Length: 174
Image 1 (cartoon, helix red, strand yellow):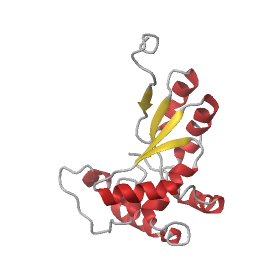
Image 2 (image 1 turned 135 degrees about the horizontal axis):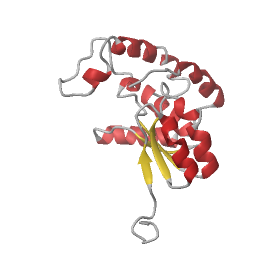
Image 3 (image 1 turned 90 degrees about the vertical axis):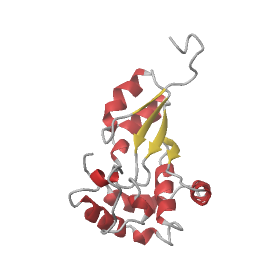
């Protein structure tokens, strides 16, 4: 109705965390123009069912959490701590921080042969998929904004690099 009334031009939804399949039927219904979904080197689940559906139905994708709550910036260590009110205190609880840091370390091969930094590689990974039109990275200062724009300008990762990154998919919930 809002479209018919001219009040809304485009309509999108943000999908449940770590459940991209929850949006497939909505995409197929033709009711949305875009979906926002968690997508990164570790969280590749949207490629299974959601991305084929959005491509088929011409729906845009906004990839969120491309840095996996900052882990894919490569700046976290096993000793990293977060303020009590920082949600990452819970997100990286119970040994998840140590496992995440190990998994990020296993990605160091990306720099410098495939990207100038891990954040660049993370953003370029997202933008390499034909379904993704936009990536929503966190930006705290002008330098990070410039780095993120440079990553986008660098273009997609090479197919052989993307193929190697498939093995870094991490099945986890929450």
